[in-house]
Length: 505
Length: 112
Image (cartoon, rainbow over the protein chains, first blue to last red):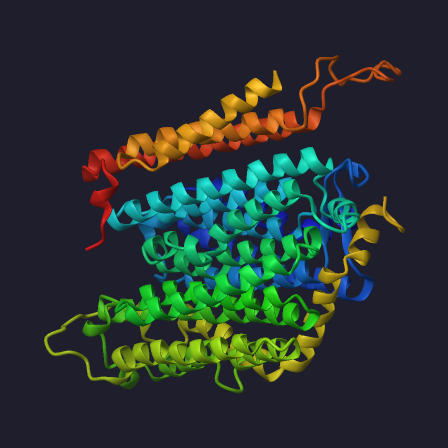
């Protein structure tokens, strides 16, 4: 029974989602349940994190079947940290829904249940120890994201959702095909067992190389890497704010997490060629993402396109494949989850106070909402990378990792792209907050939703922004933990021992 | 037998990619349908087809006998269910696009 803590995150989310379904007709109760589910998730995964930190990877063997034959769920340090951040985001976004953060029509059609199903899929993907279950969790989170994306039935949502669905189904099929071929080649689907069996190859045979590339394409689509990201700017800005925030905070990150697992556990001996390729792809992702963001004029579009550029940072760090680089990638990922979600939630309030998020028709928020402006500055400058906020350290660690292996091109790109990031964030600042409200833009917002400092929305944004600040202040200890996590990924001995018993199978 | 299945699978993949690259929404849907079936058939084929008994153990009835590998079939079963659900959703979505918005062609999906 005590091993159940490993799956407590996904399990609690699933239970909350089911509980929400029982109260289909009363959105109020669902709203509270959603918040409660988020809090429970956060608490349970914090316990799990402490346990993993003290005792090493925790394993749950489903039905008591031993590892290579049964299904295992494993929480190593990386999974438990990401689980904790997921719990935090779930809580904060559930809080945002109070007092008008989400319209009641959408609530009546199961918004809360769907967001918990999404959390279920995401958390499941983080703790599963089996590549086929990773596929299943991906499908769970995709399915809920499909419905969240069309919920509300506006034209933009339906059109965006179609593109999103087609490309994601394609990527899932790639994933499925490569799982089938991997099973045919290696004869197992368990991460630990795969890692042991694949490490016997000194050089990968062509068939396994093809599988690894197929998996790279599948995860690359989900993460939004360079030539495969076009679905993201087409769809992310359409759904309602809390759904957008969930997507921005979690979905691409699951793709990134899978990429990290793929290249640390399964194919670390891929050879430098692949990582060189990945480096170029990351650079293209970063540059194109940030230029796309600069060219947009809607806040949410700027933020969505910007996600792509941030994904590039993480894969750039991953392509260097040193413990420090991997820790930097994890740090960057967590920083991005906090800062990006915070900015999306802020964009919701901006949109509500102006009636639009089109930058030419917004303005004057600095004089009317000083606290919101401060919180925006913290998150936006955090994203751009100004000290002492988290983004500064995230970039510093990436630069340090690049300098250690003498990849000076990376440093140039990282710093250059941050300048453009700063530029696009300042663009939002100037247009929405600093300049006077445009003449003739008479819009009388629902003051109960967006004005007060003590509104649930402001509290949730405050939590995330202080997260950005605290991650910067405590960068040292956090980075130490992440370095341990990264070492656990690069050298999966502990993980394998926990799953298969001492000495492997 | 396996060789023939490989030919069929490749044909299905080619067909599905051809359909996915079309402009009409209904053809794209058909493409997705064919694609998921091609993937399932591939999982079924790659571990090798064996004519033998079913892998149900009674005493030591399986000792030394050729038997089918049950795992790929379990995988396919899961994958079929998932792809059915997702395709049903995609079908409903395309109905909405067609009936509400009169969009039948991806070229009409441009953003303003």
